[in-house]
Image 1: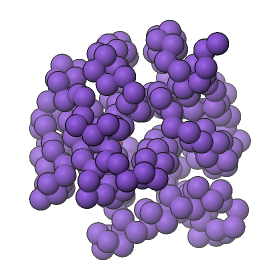
Image 2 (image 1 turned 90 degrees about the vertical axis):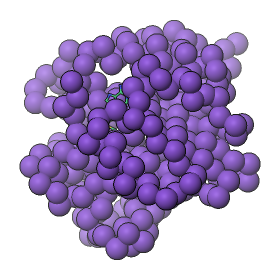
Image 3 (image 1 turned 90 degrees about the horizontal axis):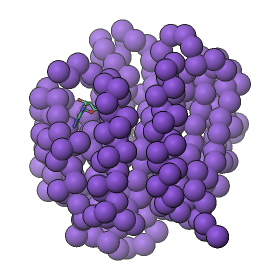
Length: 289
Ligand code: SAM
Protein backbone atom coordinates (compact mmCIF):
# COMPACT_ATOMS: atom_id res chain seq x y z
CA UNK A 1 0.00 0.00 0.00
CA UNK A 2 1.55 3.27 -1.13
CA UNK A 3 0.78 6.31 0.99
CA UNK A 4 3.76 8.57 0.25
CA UNK A 5 3.06 11.60 -1.93
CA UNK A 6 5.96 13.85 -2.74
CA UNK A 7 3.78 17.00 -2.94
CA UNK A 8 4.08 17.26 0.88
CA UNK A 9 7.86 17.36 0.68
CA UNK A 10 8.66 19.02 -2.67
CA UNK A 11 11.31 21.71 -2.40
CA UNK A 12 12.43 20.70 1.10
CA UNK A 13 16.09 20.64 2.10
CA UNK A 14 16.52 17.05 0.86
CA UNK A 15 15.07 17.95 -2.55
CA UNK A 16 17.37 20.96 -2.84
CA UNK A 17 20.53 18.92 -2.25
CA UNK A 18 19.35 16.10 -4.56
CA UNK A 19 18.22 18.33 -7.43
CA UNK A 20 21.29 20.55 -7.16
CA UNK A 21 23.57 17.52 -7.52
CA UNK A 22 21.42 16.08 -10.34
CA UNK A 23 21.76 19.45 -12.08
CA UNK A 24 25.57 19.42 -11.74
CA UNK A 25 25.80 15.86 -13.09
CA UNK A 26 23.55 16.47 -16.10
CA UNK A 27 25.31 19.76 -16.88
CA UNK A 28 28.62 17.91 -16.89
CA UNK A 29 27.26 15.37 -19.43
CA UNK A 30 26.22 18.20 -21.71
CA UNK A 31 29.84 19.17 -22.26
CA UNK A 32 29.87 16.49 -24.98
CA UNK A 33 27.39 16.24 -27.86
CA UNK A 34 26.96 12.47 -27.51
CA UNK A 35 23.51 11.63 -26.10
CA UNK A 36 22.73 10.61 -22.56
CA UNK A 37 19.76 8.71 -21.10
CA UNK A 38 18.21 9.81 -17.82
CA UNK A 39 16.39 7.22 -15.69
CA UNK A 40 14.25 7.98 -12.65
CA UNK A 41 13.30 4.79 -10.81
CA UNK A 42 10.93 6.66 -8.45
CA UNK A 43 9.86 9.66 -10.50
CA UNK A 44 6.98 11.16 -8.52
CA UNK A 45 4.54 13.56 -10.22
CA UNK A 46 7.11 15.63 -12.14
CA UNK A 47 5.89 19.08 -11.09
CA UNK A 48 4.68 20.51 -7.79
CA UNK A 49 3.20 23.74 -6.47
CA UNK A 50 4.80 25.44 -3.49
CA UNK A 51 1.36 26.88 -2.75
CA UNK A 52 -0.54 23.57 -2.78
CA UNK A 53 -2.41 22.60 0.38
CA UNK A 54 0.00 19.64 0.77
CA UNK A 55 3.07 21.88 0.61
CA UNK A 56 1.60 24.52 2.93
CA UNK A 57 0.49 21.84 5.38
CA UNK A 58 4.01 20.56 6.12
CA UNK A 59 5.84 23.84 5.41
CA UNK A 60 8.91 21.77 4.53
CA UNK A 61 9.84 24.00 1.60
CA UNK A 62 10.27 26.90 4.09
CA UNK A 63 13.62 25.50 5.21
CA UNK A 64 14.50 24.37 1.67
CA UNK A 65 13.91 26.20 -1.58
CA UNK A 66 11.93 29.09 -0.08
CA UNK A 67 14.78 29.87 2.32
CA UNK A 68 17.34 29.80 -0.49
CA UNK A 69 15.24 32.10 -2.66
CA UNK A 70 14.90 34.56 0.22
CA UNK A 71 18.66 34.56 0.82
CA UNK A 72 19.31 35.06 -2.88
CA UNK A 73 16.94 38.02 -2.92
CA UNK A 74 18.61 39.61 0.12
CA UNK A 75 22.14 39.27 -1.24
CA UNK A 76 23.03 37.38 -4.38
CA UNK A 77 26.73 38.07 -3.75
CA UNK A 78 27.05 35.73 -0.76
CA UNK A 79 25.97 32.66 -2.73
CA UNK A 80 28.34 30.07 -4.22
CA UNK A 81 28.35 30.48 -8.01
CA UNK A 82 27.03 26.93 -8.55
CA UNK A 83 23.97 27.71 -6.39
CA UNK A 84 23.37 30.98 -8.24
CA UNK A 85 23.40 29.07 -11.52
CA UNK A 86 21.00 26.44 -10.15
CA UNK A 87 18.59 29.12 -8.89
CA UNK A 88 18.79 30.90 -12.27
CA UNK A 89 17.79 27.62 -13.91
CA UNK A 90 14.85 27.30 -11.52
CA UNK A 91 13.84 30.85 -12.43
CA UNK A 92 14.01 29.97 -16.13
CA UNK A 93 11.86 26.86 -15.63
CA UNK A 94 9.27 28.89 -13.69
CA UNK A 95 9.31 31.69 -16.26
CA UNK A 96 8.82 29.26 -19.14
CA UNK A 97 5.92 27.63 -17.25
CA UNK A 98 4.55 31.07 -16.30
CA UNK A 99 4.28 29.88 -12.71
CA UNK A 100 6.44 31.41 -9.99
CA UNK A 101 5.19 28.87 -7.45
CA UNK A 102 6.23 25.83 -9.50
CA UNK A 103 8.81 23.53 -8.00
CA UNK A 104 10.20 21.02 -10.53
CA UNK A 105 10.70 17.40 -9.53
CA UNK A 106 13.67 15.41 -10.78
CA UNK A 107 12.01 14.51 -14.15
CA UNK A 108 11.41 18.21 -14.76
CA UNK A 109 15.01 19.21 -13.99
CA UNK A 110 16.17 16.49 -16.37
CA UNK A 111 13.73 17.48 -19.10
CA UNK A 112 14.87 21.08 -18.89
CA UNK A 113 18.50 20.05 -19.33
CA UNK A 114 17.91 17.43 -22.05
CA UNK A 115 18.74 18.14 -25.66
CA UNK A 116 17.08 16.78 -28.78
CA UNK A 117 19.36 13.72 -28.76
CA UNK A 118 18.80 12.83 -25.07
CA UNK A 119 16.15 10.46 -23.70
CA UNK A 120 14.46 9.73 -20.36
CA UNK A 121 12.69 6.74 -18.82
CA UNK A 122 10.56 7.37 -15.74
CA UNK A 123 8.96 4.79 -13.44
CA UNK A 124 6.27 5.61 -10.88
CA UNK A 125 4.10 3.10 -9.06
CA UNK A 126 1.51 5.28 -7.30
CA UNK A 127 -1.52 5.51 -9.65
CA UNK A 128 -2.37 9.16 -8.82
CA UNK A 129 1.25 10.30 -9.03
CA UNK A 130 1.67 8.34 -12.26
CA UNK A 131 -1.33 10.06 -13.84
CA UNK A 132 0.13 13.46 -12.89
CA UNK A 133 3.50 12.44 -14.31
CA UNK A 134 1.90 11.41 -17.62
CA UNK A 135 -0.05 14.65 -17.80
CA UNK A 136 3.08 16.64 -17.06
CA UNK A 137 5.26 15.00 -19.71
CA UNK A 138 2.40 15.31 -22.22
CA UNK A 139 3.74 15.12 -25.75
CA UNK A 140 7.49 15.12 -25.12
CA UNK A 141 8.51 12.18 -27.31
CA UNK A 142 11.96 11.99 -25.74
CA UNK A 143 10.43 10.83 -22.45
CA UNK A 144 8.77 7.50 -21.70
CA UNK A 145 6.82 6.78 -18.51
CA UNK A 146 5.92 3.40 -17.00
CA UNK A 147 3.52 2.61 -14.11
CA UNK A 148 5.88 -0.06 -12.82
CA UNK A 149 7.43 -1.28 -9.59
CA UNK A 150 11.06 -0.29 -9.89
CA UNK A 151 12.33 -2.96 -7.59
CA UNK A 152 10.85 -5.61 -9.89
CA UNK A 153 10.78 -4.07 -13.34
CA UNK A 154 13.43 -1.39 -13.67
CA UNK A 155 16.38 -3.57 -14.63
CA UNK A 156 14.66 -4.57 -17.87
CA UNK A 157 15.05 -0.95 -19.07
CA UNK A 158 18.84 -1.22 -19.02
CA UNK A 159 21.17 -0.77 -20.77
CA UNK A 160 20.28 2.37 -22.71
CA UNK A 161 20.95 2.73 -26.41
CA UNK A 162 23.06 5.79 -25.61
CA UNK A 163 26.50 5.08 -24.20
CA UNK A 164 26.02 7.46 -21.28
CA UNK A 165 23.32 7.36 -18.64
CA UNK A 166 22.29 8.70 -15.24
CA UNK A 167 20.08 6.61 -12.97
CA UNK A 168 18.40 8.36 -10.05
CA UNK A 169 17.25 5.90 -7.38
CA UNK A 170 14.99 7.85 -5.06
CA UNK A 171 12.53 5.69 -3.09
CA UNK A 172 10.53 7.12 -0.17
CA UNK A 173 12.00 4.57 2.32
CA UNK A 174 8.50 4.28 3.81
CA UNK A 175 9.11 0.58 4.09
CA UNK A 176 12.19 -0.71 5.83
CA UNK A 177 12.62 -3.17 2.97
CA UNK A 178 13.38 -0.25 0.62
CA UNK A 179 16.96 -0.12 1.97
CA UNK A 180 17.74 -3.69 1.03
CA UNK A 181 15.78 -3.35 -2.21
CA UNK A 182 18.00 -0.43 -3.22
CA UNK A 183 21.17 -2.49 -2.87
CA UNK A 184 19.65 -5.44 -4.72
CA UNK A 185 18.42 -3.16 -7.52
CA UNK A 186 21.79 -1.45 -7.76
CA UNK A 187 23.65 -4.76 -8.08
CA UNK A 188 21.28 -5.92 -10.83
CA UNK A 189 21.60 -2.60 -12.68
CA UNK A 190 25.39 -2.60 -12.49
CA UNK A 191 25.46 -6.01 -14.19
CA UNK A 192 23.60 -4.51 -17.17
CA UNK A 193 25.08 -1.02 -17.16
CA UNK A 194 28.36 -0.97 -15.25
CA UNK A 195 29.51 2.48 -16.30
CA UNK A 196 26.20 4.29 -15.63
CA UNK A 197 26.23 7.18 -13.19
CA UNK A 198 24.04 6.18 -10.25
CA UNK A 199 22.60 8.76 -7.84
CA UNK A 200 21.11 7.16 -4.75
CA UNK A 201 19.23 9.30 -2.27
CA UNK A 202 18.94 8.33 1.40
CA UNK A 203 17.58 9.94 4.56
CA UNK A 204 19.50 10.02 7.85
CA UNK A 205 17.00 8.53 10.28
CA UNK A 206 16.67 7.78 13.94
CA UNK A 207 17.07 4.03 13.55
CA UNK A 208 20.24 4.36 11.52
CA UNK A 209 18.89 2.27 8.63
CA UNK A 210 21.06 4.15 6.16
CA UNK A 211 24.26 2.96 7.85
CA UNK A 212 23.78 -0.59 6.52
CA UNK A 213 22.91 0.76 3.08
CA UNK A 214 26.13 2.79 2.97
CA UNK A 215 28.19 -0.18 4.13
CA UNK A 216 26.68 -2.44 1.49
CA UNK A 217 27.36 0.10 -1.24
CA UNK A 218 30.92 0.62 -0.04
CA UNK A 219 31.42 -3.16 -0.07
CA UNK A 220 30.66 -3.21 -3.81
CA UNK A 221 34.02 -1.41 -4.22
CA UNK A 222 33.04 0.53 -7.33
CA UNK A 223 35.72 3.13 -8.01
CA UNK A 224 34.62 6.77 -7.85
CA UNK A 225 31.79 6.32 -5.35
CA UNK A 226 31.20 9.64 -3.61
CA UNK A 227 29.08 10.27 -0.52
CA UNK A 228 27.56 13.70 0.17
CA UNK A 229 25.56 14.29 3.35
CA UNK A 230 24.11 17.18 5.33
CA UNK A 231 23.04 16.62 8.93
CA UNK A 232 20.56 19.16 10.17
CA UNK A 233 21.25 18.46 13.82
CA UNK A 234 23.90 16.69 15.84
CA UNK A 235 21.44 14.14 17.20
CA UNK A 236 19.64 11.71 14.93
CA UNK A 237 16.83 11.44 17.50
CA UNK A 238 13.80 13.71 17.29
CA UNK A 239 11.16 14.77 14.86
CA UNK A 240 11.56 14.15 11.13
CA UNK A 241 14.68 13.20 9.25
CA UNK A 242 17.98 14.24 10.82
CA UNK A 243 19.82 14.60 7.56
CA UNK A 244 19.94 13.90 3.88
CA UNK A 245 22.50 12.25 1.66
CA UNK A 246 23.32 11.21 -1.84
CA UNK A 247 25.69 8.56 -3.11
CA UNK A 248 27.14 9.10 -6.56
CA UNK A 249 28.57 6.01 -8.26
CA UNK A 250 30.91 6.53 -11.23
CA UNK A 251 30.98 10.16 -10.18
CA UNK A 252 31.91 12.38 -13.17
CA UNK A 253 35.14 14.36 -13.15
CA UNK A 254 35.17 17.57 -11.07
CA UNK A 255 31.67 17.05 -9.62
CA UNK A 256 33.24 16.54 -6.19
CA UNK A 257 34.97 19.92 -6.29
CA UNK A 258 31.81 21.65 -7.55
CA UNK A 259 29.81 20.13 -4.69
CA UNK A 260 32.61 21.03 -2.28
CA UNK A 261 32.38 24.70 -3.22
CA UNK A 262 28.67 24.84 -2.40
CA UNK A 263 28.24 22.32 0.42
CA UNK A 264 29.38 24.39 3.45
CA UNK A 265 27.04 27.18 2.39
CA UNK A 266 24.16 24.76 1.81
CA UNK A 267 24.77 23.09 5.18
CA UNK A 268 24.72 26.50 6.86
CA UNK A 269 21.54 27.60 5.21
CA UNK A 270 19.34 24.56 4.61
CA UNK A 271 17.17 23.19 7.38
CA UNK A 272 15.90 24.92 10.51
CA UNK A 273 19.10 25.02 12.52
CA UNK A 274 22.09 27.05 11.43
CA UNK A 275 25.54 25.47 11.17
CA UNK A 276 24.47 21.97 10.37
CA UNK A 277 27.39 19.70 9.61
CA UNK A 278 28.20 17.99 6.34
CA UNK A 279 30.36 15.24 4.84
CA UNK A 280 31.79 14.70 1.44
CA UNK A 281 33.89 11.53 1.29
CA UNK A 282 35.01 9.06 -1.30
CA UNK A 283 33.38 5.83 -0.12
CA UNK A 284 35.54 4.25 -2.80
CA UNK A 285 38.17 6.45 -4.49
CA UNK A 286 39.09 6.48 -8.16
CA UNK A 287 42.02 4.14 -7.90
CA UNK A 288 41.91 1.19 -5.56
CA UNK A 289 45.67 0.68 -5.71
N1 SAM B 1 12.34 11.53 -7.68
C1 SAM B 1 11.28 12.48 -7.34
C2 SAM B 1 11.85 13.87 -7.34
O1 SAM B 1 13.01 14.05 -6.93
O2 SAM B 1 11.16 14.80 -7.76
C3 SAM B 1 10.67 12.19 -6.00
C4 SAM B 1 10.25 10.78 -5.79
S1 SAM B 1 9.50 10.43 -4.25
C5 SAM B 1 10.78 10.61 -3.08
C6 SAM B 1 9.33 8.67 -4.35
C7 SAM B 1 8.27 8.19 -5.32
O3 SAM B 1 8.43 6.77 -5.49
C8 SAM B 1 6.83 8.39 -4.88
O4 SAM B 1 6.13 9.12 -5.85
C9 SAM B 1 6.25 6.97 -4.75
O5 SAM B 1 4.90 6.87 -5.15
C10 SAM B 1 7.14 6.20 -5.68
N2 SAM B 1 7.30 4.75 -5.40
C11 SAM B 1 7.28 4.11 -4.21
N3 SAM B 1 7.60 2.81 -4.36
C12 SAM B 1 7.83 2.61 -5.68
C13 SAM B 1 8.25 1.49 -6.45
N4 SAM B 1 8.47 0.29 -5.86
N5 SAM B 1 8.42 1.63 -7.78
C14 SAM B 1 8.21 2.84 -8.37
N6 SAM B 1 7.82 3.95 -7.70
C15 SAM B 1 7.63 3.84 -6.36
